[in-house]
Image (cartoon, rainbow, N blue to C red; front, side):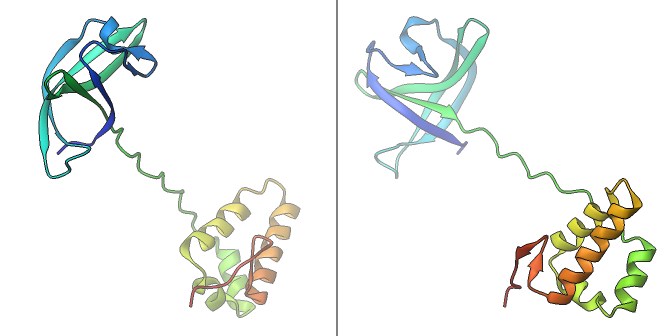
Length: 160
């Protein structure tokens, strides 16, 4: 079944709004498609309703509607698809940071951190505009890795 959410029901012709528009006051335009929808009350039942659009100025509202029983109409709207989370850009490790982590004996501490923290540190350092700022950020990362319970000046505990 498609993802549709129940928005309400009413008797034939009763005032009923979807997105602030009374559905009975607009001409319904069939999309030529149907939606198979689970009944909101009798969850083991499903209905096949026609899909319509109505317009209000420049706004087009899509909905599925049909009679649950004699003159009792049910209205549904499509659930918008979930947008995938946008992945953060992956930042390569600069050679000088790799050498510093190895020299200070902090590479294992760095690699023990979650991938997002490793990436955040590298991105944060690489976005510095001035050499002094970059060095200050490297020093903060090294200090936090040495302490082990801090990330970006916030308390942090590794998952056990």
